[in-house]
Image (tube, rainbow, N blue to C red; front, side, top):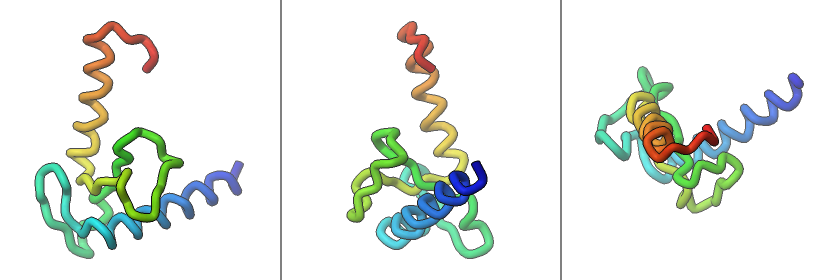
Length: 88
């Protein structure tokens, strides 16, 4: 279990670093800019929802601040609820 968590963290840090390099230290939704002091609040959102889909060109990623990332996922949950979906 511990090894699996460590492998997942290493994988995430790899694509996060690549996404920051490609897309910059800015939220794609609200345009908030980040620096070393608050970079931990900038997350990588997988556009297709598949965390294993990490193409090297970054086409499945967008950098979102923690607030916009939460909003993005909340919208999906709300849409599913309003549509009557029980999958989530």
